[in-house]
Figure (cartoon, rainbow, N blue to C red):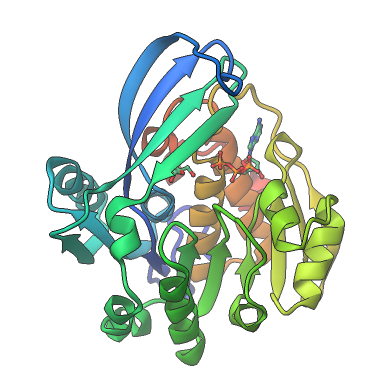
Length: 315
Ligand code: ATP
Ligand code: RIB
C-alpha cells in the first residue's frame, strides 16, 4: 500500500461495499447516564447523522476507499438528508432503497460527561432491507474487494450478504452489533474478520466473560479472524496464522465514544481493501478511532485520512 494515498499496488483505491443501517441520532448530553426509572436533565441536544452501516461507510470513504452502500431509508426528510450526506462523501448510494412504509431509522443516544453512552435504536426502514434486495445487487458485490455488515439490518439480509460475498471470493467483515444472541453456527465460516466489542463478544460466545476466551471460542467456531475491541484498552486479535495478541489503544481523553467501533471497522475495511497487512490495518483503525472519541457525535467525529496523527511506524 502507498502510505499517503491509500491505494493498492495497482494504484487503485480499495473498494468497500457496506450493507447496513442509516439512522438519525437524537443525542442528549447529560452529566451522567440515567438509572432505570430516573429522569436527568440534558445540557445539550443535537440531531446528528448516524447508523452503524452509514458510519462505517463514511469511515472507509474518509480513508480514501471507493465505497458503495446497500441500505434502506424512509421516504421522509431525514432519509433524504442522510442519503445526500452519504453521496456528498463520494459514496455510491444507488443501492440504497427508499421504503414507502417505514420511516428512516433513529437512535436515541445519551452521552455522559465521562464520554460513556447508552443507545436505543428504532430500526424503521433498516428493518425493511430484505435478502432479495441484497441478492438483486450481485454486481455491487462483484465490484468490491471487502464486504462489511453489522446487525442493524435483518439477520436473513446479513446472511444473504455474507453468503454472496463468500461465493464471489470477497473479504468479509462482520461487526456484530447490536448482539442479542450467539450467531448461527453456519454463519461462522462466512466471516473473515469478526469485530465485536467486549460485551458483544461475550454474548456471541455464550456468555464467556473474558475477551480472550470469547475470541478463541469464536475463532474455533469458524470465524477466520476475531478482533475484539476493548475501548480505551485497544483490541485483542486472534486468527488464522495470528497468535492471540493485545494491541493497546492510543492514550487520549475521550469525550464521546459513539462510533468509535464504527470508525475502527470502516478504516479496517478500507485498509484491508487497499491490500494492507492486518497489523497495519488495525493500527490505522485504532488511530482513527482514537481521533473519533475526542469529538462529539457519530459521523461528525469520524476523521479523514489527512487528519490522522500517523507515525512512520504504521505507514
Ligand atoms: P461504539 O459502540 O461506542 O461505537 P464500540 O463499543 O463498538 O464503540 P469500543 O471497543 O468502545 O467500540 O472502541 C473501538 C475502538 O476505539 C477501540 O478498540 C479503541 O481503538 C478506540 N477507543 C475507544 N475508546 C477509546 C478511548 N477512551 N481512548 C482511546 N481509544 C479508544
Ligand atoms: O455505533 C454507533 C451508532 O449506533 C449510532 O450512530 C446509532 O445510530 C446506532 O446505530
